[in-house]
Image (cartoon, rainbow, N blue to C red; front, side, top):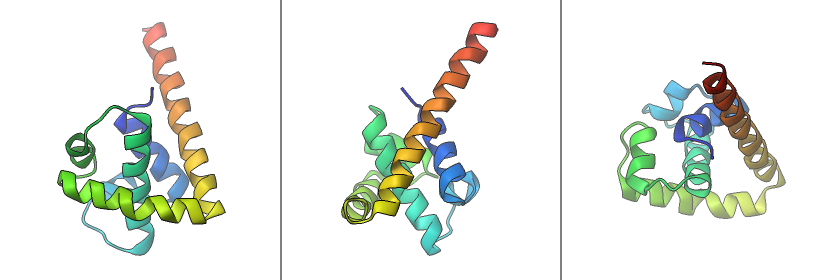
Length: 107
């Protein structure tokens, strides 16, 4: 299972904004979208609570995460490009898990 860090890094790799931007205060359109997608993917792929996801995304509050997910979910359903981005984030986050497991096995 991907970790919050794997998903955060994968979202950065696929969407463009740095991890620092995703966890920071920037509110430009692409950074907001990346942050919302990260929150959505974290909720889908992990057992993390809204509060834990908020902490992983720069100390945001649980209700802000709920709103981010509620905002991006219909956008994903309507946009083939966003659906492709979600699939790519999932693949890259999963590769991060494999890489972590391999490095742990070699240690």
